[in-house]
Length: 352
Ligand SMILES: [Zn+2]
Image (tube, rainbow, N blue to C red):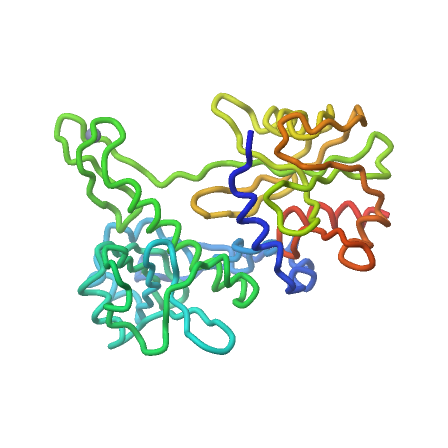
């Protein structure tokens, strides 16, 4: 099966930031913090979330119990309101110099609040509530009354320029807006749907049907396969990659399939290699538009490579030294920093 998000991965692959090595020390550490939202209402969140990959650092509390409340009600519980504008799957950034995300607040948000066709409640962080504000109905986003010097841009083009936390917030707002815009009609009866729970549910308006629809996330598996002698790993060059970049094998989970079966099937289809010892490692959100990468390790039981489904132009067994030399003297490139593919490879490199 073709892994349709690979073209997107290659953009993230350009990440040059090395923050993940700094944050790597956070793995295994978490502190559970209690904080008060309103008198008598306590909830908890992980205040120090694990951060290994891009888009995995959405530290706001999603506060699902507040999704039924309007802004007016929330005003008694939070002091600040921040709006993250989206337009046709793009996020608002400041023009010129280093790109920077634009979160709109205060008087600057008046036009957005009055004109966005969809306001989604994202969550709270401290005393600040975050909302997504979608204006995709505008043919020309230039008609919007937004802060000067801003424009809408594809988040994936900004991945190298903005911090992981901000990127996570932008991705969250974008993903929820995308789902709402693509769920305007009921999949069961075709009637119009209406937003509920501040953009986290859509309800069919046909009284006979009345089906509720919820945001979906499509699981994709991504796996590092080691050679039977564990001295090499299996990497492939996808036909969609720019340059001679090699990455771990990946693909979508199919209906009626366990994650482990999906891992074994994808490796077989893309490389012809049989595997065993399939073990889950970690996950990376990939909301473009609605996926999550589920990372695995596995061990080959065969070594002959045959790129059966032609998704990969080429696949090879690489020694650790060959992988370490990627991006240096060799023409071949490794996956990007901050990608789960790179993390899986780095973990294997660090084993010796
Ligand atoms: Zn319906």
